[in-house]
Image (cartoon, rainbow, N blue to C red):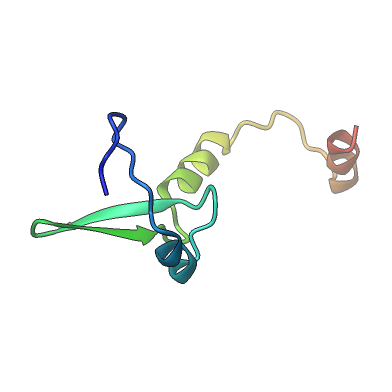
Length: 74
């Protein structure tokens, strides 16, 4: 297996199946000595946490659940 010029590598299907790595699954790399370990990102993924922090405090008006649902359905 080779790393492409873009730094990409294909994870074999058998490994993806065993780990439940579906398209768009967040993964993490961890170094253990000179071994790189690939694992599924935990529930508290940094990306999700960052998105929530970025959104926190952005609302300028209070909307009811019904009003929010009406906005998302238009």
